[in-house]
Length: 490
Image 1 (spheres, one colour):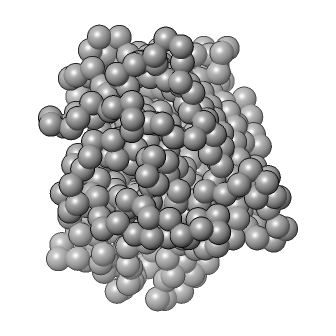
Image 2 (spheres, helix red, strand yellow):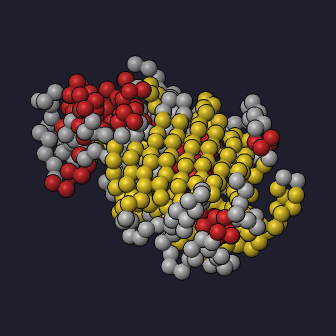
Image 3 (tube, one colour):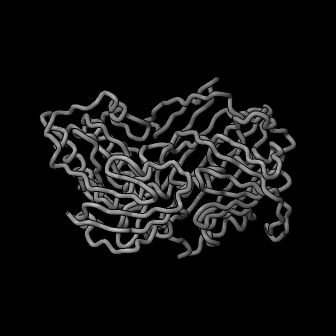
């Protein structure tokens, strides 16, 4: 048995970091607000090609290339390619994201293709609008899944939300809501954009008068400065992330060696006390500040949140009965496959059958599956939109990969399972992390990275879910503050 190192705890966080800055440029936005003007052609006569460097606290970590094409049919096409080098727990990895969107002459959305590639994983999502539905296809060509998202209105889409706000002729100081579709989580969420005072900023050696827009997405603030033609010249996001328009020659300059900053480290939170053996704790009390009015799942189950104090009590598994797989009818939804948790795929079902026996009860199945994932999936930080089938084939990943595969195997074995995301204590700090909750007579936490059932009490659940719910963490990052008030040993 190998010793677990701290560097597994990267989890889904890196995906969220990209979303805070890049989702506004790479994903699809649909305008559902009445009164916003249809985009005029004069508003979209921007350069055919734009280059932007991506920085983290003034250190270049990537580059974005965007093409805006006017088609003979009167429609438009946008193509964006992002290349980044990301330091995850001391390991520098390359990430490539490409997005293509097709727009009708009136700028309404027609179709899209989103592709993410990293060192180990690839994620693809593409789709099109058909009347009142968004038809989606996700996964690699060999294992694509089709799904649908209902739409109240046929959407009007801009290449990014700031351009949509620019084209709408927004008045200063008045926020407008937009709906955002995120292909990586297949969810639609609302974002509010406000036009702020115009500013003169230096761009490519010149001082340029710009319109400034700021977006509030789940409590996370991002801003952009647009030129007179609506072209984005500069953008800023969380954790010191920013993008700025540069010349093609400047964009092609390589990233300097050693310039990458470890995102996991700068996003983690220091602990005011050292916890020597988290797995031996029976209870922990933590004061939490900085959450504002964010909707988080802090209360419920083993967690009790009252007046800014969170109490987490270790669950007892000795009281579980060795019953057969019986559960309330309402739990059937947690047995169903999803786009990222493909519990009905033949490979997933076959692997589950190899791990458990038909005669095993709920507890035995839970322990066997969590232990199998712990032993067989290499613990290493990766950049991905993880799905269970790819994790099973690659046999590697961080906590997010462990969580989606564990959920898929548990569901395939007949156990309701969900994914929880939040923070966990490691070596004096709290890191963003993902784990599972399993129904085995009652809901029990399980962490396949630590091989813990139940998970130790330093696992602080913030959200539960495997799609859009995880975007709620965007409003937490950089704001949440923790103070451990007390701990109790078993």
